[in-house]
Length: 363
Image (cartoon, rainbow, N blue to C red; front, side, top):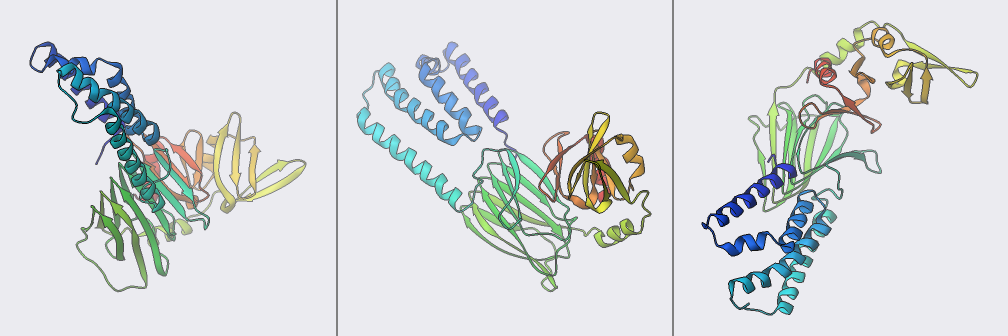
């Protein structure tokens, strides 16, 4: 499902234009064009646009209002009599509106759809676990954090491709909560993982497309959650040698081991383990660390050459990031990439930076 509201709305407008042309040519009844070229239909189109953008409340209200005025108008211009009164029709429309609101309220209460207007959002719950929400689009999200921490993902009217191949499970049970509504969630895991699922589905399906399904092991991923009017797919791919890669990183020789910063007549010595990322700031750079942010009179070019390349990568002309602080990587469309850190911050990555990051992380 690769639906985007802009494409969908564009198709709707093209169909309306086609109907108007056919009406002008006498192929479809003339009253059709009268209905379309009216303030009633304009309100309806605005309502549909809001719905496709995820603004449900104003979208449904405008759609109901336009329907209330449009139906009597249709009967009037066609010279036929309405089977019910306008008052009864209003009662039916209000009832339908209440049913729709009740439906979405239930979905949100059970977290089967994200209670957010954001196209894509990553946050953390009270226990510090990541919560990923995707709506009205396709997102490719790669989990890199090692060891893996329990995560909750929500997909509504879109597709979320969750790649877990480059992470490692902790000993014992790890959990992935999946809430899917009118969308598709595709989960890719290493073929050696022991995975068990318990997903409640209402007019939806959970499909396990793994070729091999290991049942024994000291590490297990438990997938649970809810699925309504959508599809959740589990796939397996060949394992990446994450352990070997981590050891290779540890064996590399560092170029510098710490960074000294003077602030308020005090010298702070920042170890590389404390450094989240470096951001360009004119003739200076800002060091984002566990101790806070520090301004240093150095260039990005200097740090790009001085920092150990096996531990730091320049993902953008404005950012150099600590590889060990990366939690996940997102591809949000053509040439739109973001690096998500363990502290929840999101950094934009350029196309070249993303490709270099992929090589470093072997994703």
